Image (cartoon, rainbow, N blue to C red; front, side, top):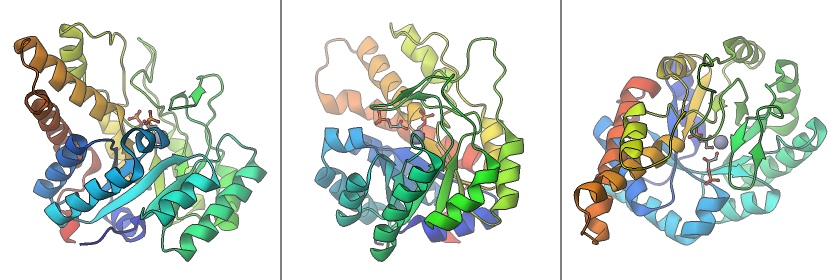
Length: 313
Ligand code: G3H
Ligand code: 13P
Ligand code: ZN
């Protein structure tokens, strides 16, 4: 099966009350762990690549690894650019075979965000590619951007109709209290997501797919393993899974997960070396890392996203 765009995936997800997992990838083991889990669960999947991941692994390697996953699994897979910063990177990914791109204009003024997003949409749609836009600012750390909690801002529902109609985007990322990274809430702070904003956005944009970034749950199982073997992970706190499940049953059709993968992978490697300090064959220590990724993604598909079996529908 060739790559699919996210358009049809999202229509089915909206109607079915589930979300598609959008998992960040940057190497073969991560791609294999994710797609093997998706295959066993018959789940559609989005593999997404940040600018940093693209720089690390190189565009051609990532595209070819995803092509290999398509051959291996025959699943509906979309290949998506995560947090495209400008028109050029979006164009390069569209020209280079991605089926979906995000243009993240959230750091710009509303007017400039519309202008930039519209330009990307025009190019993408002319080339059969879907586009995700963003309104509102998430806290947390991405490659080049570090937005403090004080500078983060919730999406303003009164802006979404104008943004979507003027830009023509296919999906919209909104800020309702999630954030990037493994430290999403302060110790003692009650995790809070603004479901009232999500519901107001959904009311204003009927049948329109909403995206949640910063949606890792930060599994304490992996945090404890990393800490046990010397890692510094005190106060790592994620989004409670029941909140994500609730969002997936509403208008949220895409849930972005990166930090959980990093934790699962790192826990596998650390545990392996703690038990086998003299080994030095990468195949040995990358096997438990890949197994952890697979177990994590299966868990997400079944318990958080609710999309098990959806590849067949
Ligand atoms: O939202 C950001 C993703 O977690 C990607 O992170 O830019 O460090 O690859 P990265
Ligand atoms: P997490 O850091 O919560 O995994 O978020 C990832 C993300 O939003 C990628 O765009
Ligand atoms: Zn993100």
